[in-house]
Image 1 (cartoon, one colour):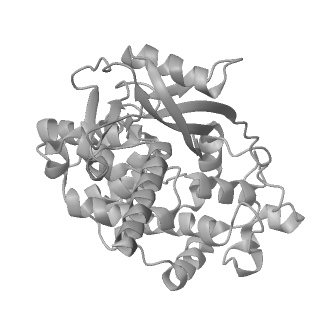
Image 2 (cartoon, helix red, strand yellow):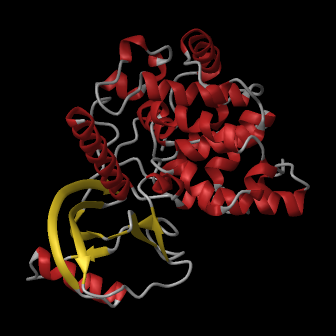
Length: 367
């Protein structure tokens, strides 16, 4: 890859002047606290800024520092994360906080190698923490920055991380000597606000004169869109009640949606009807037979590379279910708020609460 022909000596000046005027006021930009920057950067992975803001603020109320996070039960941490998805991020933060307390006296290390060894903290997060909190000379490359660099250099193809080192090597002579943290923020903001994946706002860009893709009119096709494929999953869910309480169960501590709680059920096998699948799942999971089932609702949700449809039944059992300690739990509808749930289960709970509210309203009108 050839280095851009233009002299980039004024690139950072133009970019930083634009950023100073146009950047968004975000809660994690009001501090140099490495813990808060760590939390925000972890939350922002695979999640939009607007979605993260309320989660970040609530998280800081519950876990204002590393010590409070390290002492919190994992279930409480996962509950605070509910709705952000990719729950392994929260588990890694929880584990890393304990290591920081034990090994580094509660202070986030300022050495790249030590920081990069912590669970869930890879090259990108390490560079972000060190530059944004300590103003160390580490450039960051997230999806937004990667897209900006590819257009600046007119690098074709998909936005894959394996291009990062080549992109940075070409861009390195034009990085600022000071204010690297501010520069990184400006690059990310440029990609988020102007250099968008679709319909980039090139005429508003403060550095378009340096952009090869803009010069050649290729900004709409660089980078090439990623080809996404999703696996469709059909599953059944059984709502089992006993004395006003619902039966829920905890997922394994490894794998997809680890350590979250959900209602009993599972995937429909080929050739099975919904009822047959429900009966088999309850038999396999609870060693019990379904006496009666009633179809309730259908719930759609997506996570990672899956599109899931949940077919939800209310059902009664012929015999008592076989329950395992710390795996199964009876809880009221209100009590479900204390358990971290996958998004599909959370949608079921919302439906149940709305239904309960509607029933109570009808009873009130009759009275």
